[in-house]
Length: 141
Image (cartoon, rainbow, N blue to C red; front, top):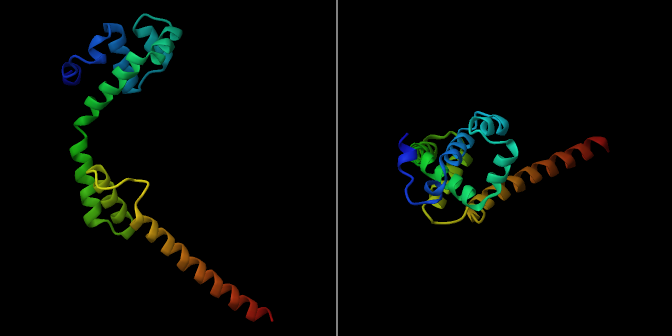
């Protein structure tokens, strides 16, 4: 497994073989904790204890990062395609916002353009509802 070989000198590497196998199996998310524990010849409680251990947690993060690293270019390409070709202006805006946030040019929480777009739409909807309500009142009277 190439991911396994590329984890050198980190928390993952410091684990014994059983814990490494548990990290991988937890990442793959195909078995229950009970099944993982049985596979590594430990109790479910031992696995639960491992999952609370800071080194084990760090090893999981390292493994996740390396394992998902290969998917990032494809995900960015898909975001780029959405930013160019999505039918919805909102989807294009969100894709561009995500790309810019990933590049360090803003935060997902603090995008003024996205907030303005959402509040502008809400304002238009409220204005339309107000007009419909006035029309309804005129019909009733």
